[in-house]
Length: 165
Ligand SMILES: CC(C)(COP(=O)(O)OP(=O)(O)OC[C@H]1O[C@@H](n2cnc3c(N)ncnc32)[C@H](O)[C@@H]1OP(=O)(O)O)[C@@H](O)C(=O)NCCC(=O)NCCS
Image (tube, rainbow, N blue to C red):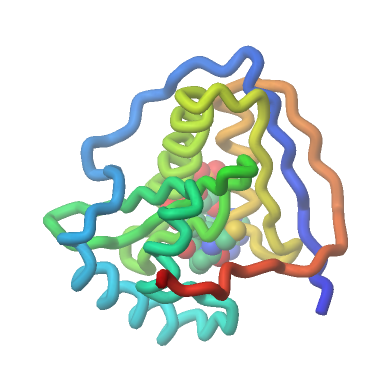
């Protein structure tokens, strides 16, 4: 089934590294229990049929995805992914931590990483109804001042289904 998204294409030509709080760090296997707890919380709120699982985390990492988490007080309370194709995806912030700019920092972390990887641009697809997510991307574009293109697209949402062998 196709979905309607805003597609953000962000040109990193003039992008400058942005400061990221120390509570946003790359995922490590020792965080697995905390991640699993937060995935359950995520699903009890959002019931997302395409939600990735813990085994899929390792499949994605093997495939070259970057995965970082928001981890205040040793508990995972959010996350974000950057795919090898340069897609920022599945950004999430736990309910009680929202509206403090964490999502914007997770997106900036993706942009910093994309710069490390010499990507010239990144993209993201945001459901048209998702105002908080749209606002977060718009705010990031204001902060970084990079060239960007935003258009409405209708696409299939593709998910990683394979698990690690
Ligand atoms: C989308 C999500 C990650 C945003 O996280 P967050 O940390 O609260 O985001 P931020 O604080 O960085 O920015 C949110 C912005 O949306 C605004 N906002 C939040 N709810 C809003 C609403 N109902 N209407 C209008 N604006 C809203 C906030 O005021 C803020 O903008 P501001 O910085 O200009 O004040 C979070 O809501 C979430 O995890 N949602 C469920 C999962 C999801 O939808 N993920 C996105 C996948 S693309």
